[in-house]
Length: 135
Ligand code: TYD
Image (cartoon, rainbow, N blue to C red; front, side, top):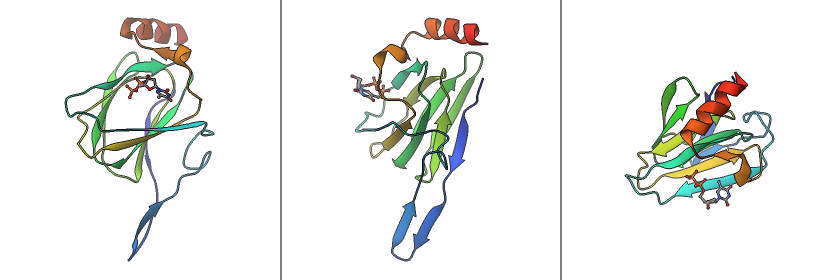
């Protein structure tokens, strides 16, 4: 199975401020078909709680901080995202929970697919079954 990866983007900075540029198939390992962002999340909320059969993602906290718990069917991995020049690449068939959102967190998500509720697995046991079929 393909693994998750922390991506570091170049900061273009000068005395007036900073800029990070990310391009499909360059810094992002897929063609970007969808962008969404998550913000205004309550500190004790857990988002995600699903896996995707087809979509790959890159998550970027352009502001604030949050933790992402990934489960690949065998093992759990916890990643903190708190830098606007850092992205978390998440392959398909990875369970994800996002939590510990700071009040100011704006999580930008790039995806390889347009939204399709049918490719979401929202039951953890069903996820484990599908991962084991793919191994
Ligand atoms: P949901 O997947 O539950 O969000 P999270 O991963 O943060 O827990 O989605 C919340 C709502 O937004 C749900 O009604 C579906 C809708 N939605 C879209 O319409 N398009 C999208 O691309 C996404 C990710 C969600």
